[in-house]
Image 1: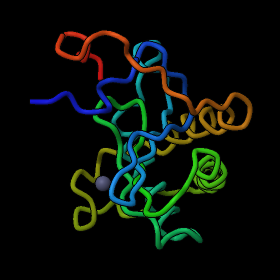
Image 2: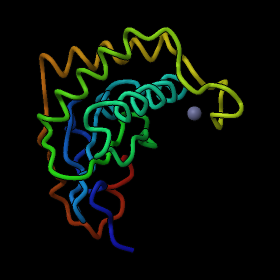
Image 3: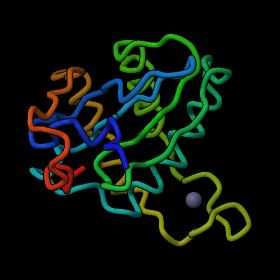
Length: 164
Ligand SMILES: [Zn+2]
């Protein structure tokens, strides 16, 4: 098996921000990094789940909704992936995400939290979601990062990818 691209990023030097995870076939996968991996606590599962519902709702109702392919959390719970069709830059996504987070902070409920509309409808936490969104918003506004540090170690040493 080949090592996949996102496992070659140095996760010990990854600040919260917005990065291009990969670009292929006319699609760009953005890494919306919310917490600093292996340095800060990851986002709690219930807060991340609420953020997913709210972010997906905003992006799929925004003026770029036609280009939004996918919104979903990372397994490591330190960020969100957004796949966009066409050419968007981290700076474009920064502007959109700031608008999205400002909207989330005005919301008093999480959309689609019934047994019919969600696969784990009790796993939600809006207050903690708001806490994470407030901090991420502040970081995007004041300390924006968009350049990855890549691992320099040889790729055939499987051990370096344990934290991906
Ligand atoms: Zn759900």
